[in-house]
Image (cartoon, rainbow, N blue to C red; front, side, top):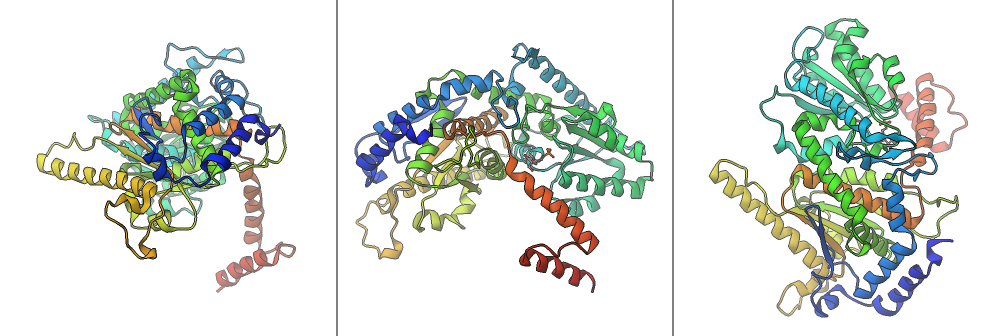
Length: 548
Ligand code: F6P
């Protein structure tokens, strides 16, 4: 049965038509206080969803939908390690990566918590060695620079977290500069390699499948660059200058990574859910194992809340339901993530993969075409910068965009120099003022100003644009862990209601296959005859230009 046929869905449709059709958010606020009713806190995060276009009845009916779609049972199935990834016939157990050492989780006969903590211990050995300045390159010099080679989930999580938590960098350790190279075109390596010394550079070859051509191409360029200075000894170069992180030990060994320098994780960890595994090695290098464990603890707190809180208080469930209401009932299919904190500049990109690769699906778990919308287009930017770029559309465009505003309450308290601290604190206050102002204007429109509005039409604001605000005390490893886990679980709840598999990504495979074929055509200067007219001409343009 399609979710649209459930009584809860139909009740929501009727409610929309009867009670919500012409309702403006400002009217809802005139009806009485909303914050207390429509906000919840967990694991250090407060979710204010009072500026969403809902009434009490909407809220209750959305909760009915969660119950009728079997969300509480689905949460149990996810966390207990059932095979929720149907098309790949395996569990999705990123939450197991955050379980404390004394927990147990038996999955198909094996206690996987022990294996997880064994892997953390191996990771710690490598981190300690690097932080002690004891990892030496082929010529005996200590490593000073580490370049993470990976793409998608093997890049975005470590990049986002290391950027966000830079001020938690491990101190009293041998300094390691971190770099990230992901793009298949080599842009990042072209920029970074000329600044590095091959003798003191270590690469992390990070790939769940160890078969991604983007990362393989970057790794090959790295090997050749190392060899051009350090000599041709392939075994020595790869042993001293590469760590491998993957689920495929045999492929790593075949490529030349020393088994001692391999970190493993499991096929039940999805790529976009893998920052909590050994894929998080760059995070541990930046903030130390202690910081990494704090990140895991924060995520675990959110997991526990997700497991135990009733649906009406459950942050990920509520966050998911608001998204469903916006997409499926209010027909808002664009969703912006807007952090008011420059340290979160990679968060929108990270959530883009998390949400769109997970829920950008149109076939149900029973193999039928869905007859409703699923994942909205997710995008975003540092909020204050977005204000001077695309907020025009949010305020006066022809389509609605649901917005998430994110901000820490306290910032810069740890800056030692008083004058600088005061200036920066003032700047943070300005950022908060802008954050609150934007969600208010989006909600109220012209009514945000108290004076009578006589402005010409091009200066008017219609308002009624829904948003949520996520406020937290400060951005630290625990809070960031909880925040990422909140979005992960939101995605799962939405996938459950949409009845799709949030853990596969078949939609990326065909492009990879056709790219391989196209590369062989480009290389061989032949074989494009039967292609479409556009592709043929594009290929010929490359051949014509490269022959000059
Ligand atoms: O092509 C998509 C994808 O498979 C993502 O799901 C994944 O995070 C990324 O590529 C990288 O994959 P891998 O870690 O196997 O190199």
